[in-house]
Image 1 (tube, rainbow, N blue to C red):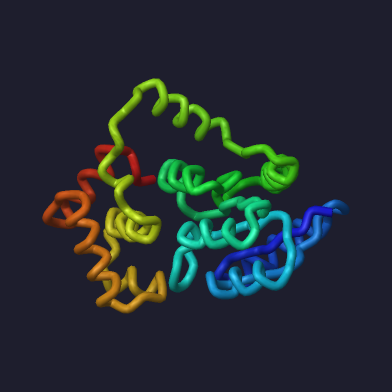
Image 2 (cartoon, rainbow, N blue to C red):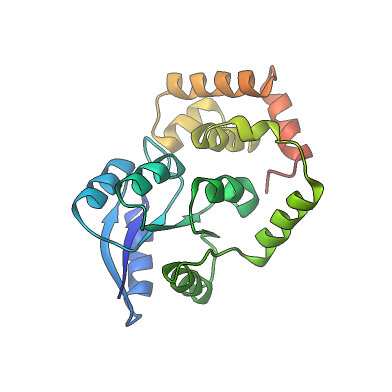
Amino acid sequence: MIRILLVDDHSVVREGLKKILEKEPDIKVSGEAGNSDEVLKFIKNKDCDIVILDINLPGRSGLDIVKDIKKFNKNIKILVLSIYPEYSFAFKAHKLGVSGYLTKDVTTDELLKAIRKIYNGRKYVSEILAERLASRIDQSEVKQVHEKLSSREFQILLLIGKGKSLTKISEELFLSYNTVYTYRNRILEKMGMNSNAELIHYLIKNNLLD
């Protein structure tokens, strides 16, 4: 039996996933969590085989707690299920040790295929991402500037790239305006840029916006 922990800040999303997964005779939803604290509390006290993890969580982002999950139990597999396209976060996610990355428009069949593949100790990489990974290896490219950013910083960078104000970002991520403002300044400093316009130009140039 494959035991799953569903992690998403929207209960409707968790309920939908639960209905899909529990139709399968070899899959059981062992628990649900809406934020990083609930995830770590579950991991400390209960067992699961796979964590299906959203990136966009209140407080600490999903990717920020991957190392913590692995610290408590290195055998737990992590499948990211996100609204963000693969080319935005998948490289970073795989470097952190997740076993697979899917977007929320994935088909039920592909989701189930990924879960079973990961459960059996393999990585799940879509054909599109596999091509991008191969391309990066072939190019032997120098580390891109945005790879210096933390998961949360990169998430905020993408939202800035979509033209969202700091106020709107703070509401969406459940962070204070001052916190988002500090993140924005840190992003500019790390990337050696001076304005949102430069950040947006960088994202467009590097095909990081959908």
